[in-house]
Amino acid sequence: MSGPRRPTDPPGLERYYVLTGGRSGPGGSASTLDVATLIISRAAAEPGLQHEHEEILRRCRDPLSVAELGAHLGLPFNILAVLLADLLDAGRVEARDPIPASGAGRGPDLALLEEVLSGLQRL
Image (tube, rainbow, N blue to C red; front, side, top):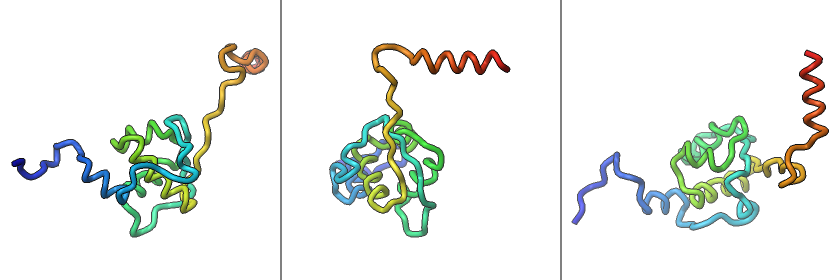
């Protein structure tokens, strides 16, 4: 028989079950989230919000990727995605796809690089 859980023990499945209300994955618009999706707060935390929801809103005042957010909060992707789904459905956060690389696989956009170079030379 194991003893009581110590604060230094890694979080268990019970904690995740409580955090997500028993849900194992996000639904709706949050089902398309991936680790590179940027999350931006659209509202401030209000009294009565779950601690993790408050932390997400606080940390995402500036855009933060789902991967970075998960690392800061110490939560696995699926658990974080469920929490983000709650906030997305409530309109408290916005999810943005990362800016795709132009011409993926072909290297940088030469026109953009020339404009940057020209701007640097004018300095």
